[in-house]
Amino acid sequence: MNTPKSLLALLALSGSLRAVRTDRGLGLRKFADKLGVSAQTLSNWETGRRAPAIEEVAHLLGFLRVSPVERQRVMRLWYQLDSPTFIETLSPDTTCLQQKLDELAFRAWEWAPHTVPEPLQTAEYARAILQRDQAPPDDVDVELFLRQARQLDRKQPRQRTVLLSEAALAPAPESQLHAINTMADRPQLRIMLVPVTDRVGRIEPFTIYETHGKGFTVAFRHHDNVIFVSERSLVQSYQSTFKTLEREAIDHVDRA
Image 1: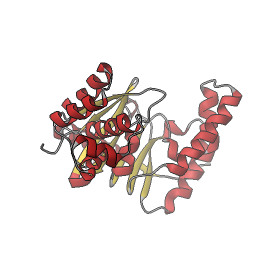
Image 2: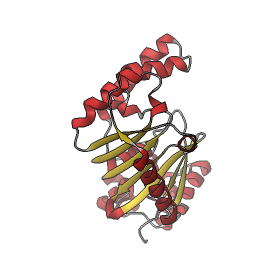
Image 3: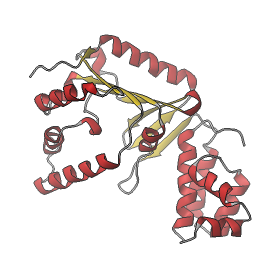
Image 4: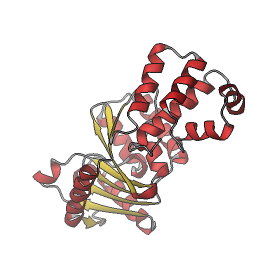
């Protein structure tokens, strides 16, 4: 089939195909033999290097006798491959596909008006956020430990520009500004502050990713969903918004 328009739908589909196999304890080569395809072909489907045809997906799901509900969910992902918009509903037991984009992206441009992105947060900042949300003290300590563990495994785009609203620093401005200045010597990371204005405050957070083949995807949250958009005119609109914010930004300056 043609190259899918939705990279995220492809990643979600490939992850689902891999999960239905591994959940049944089947090795890749053994399962490929049973399906009558090469191990390389099945690997390509499960890693998102190639999108299977709908008949191939139906055959795979039928062979594994997945439940009607699971079959419907996976088939729905296939039908979204050619859509420039993909919506992921977050749940406590799933990992946001945006982390996959972090791993795949060459460059990323992020606007953070409310909260400093987690990879850039100091421990003091993270603690202040959790305490502000009235998390129990024991839960705060556990979450801080989990965040440290996530940082060890987290991969970031090769080049990243982050625009922070000055309002986002409020929970722990001194430690956070110091950390931003410390990060200034990283050539792949640029952080700038945007002064607070009424107009700036109305622009919700978003991230633009550039992946292989000069492909661009915009990711933004809406309630419990993450929406991924690759439609060219919408991407260009977000790129224009980011450039406007960047013109108003100032380089990180230690004001402590």
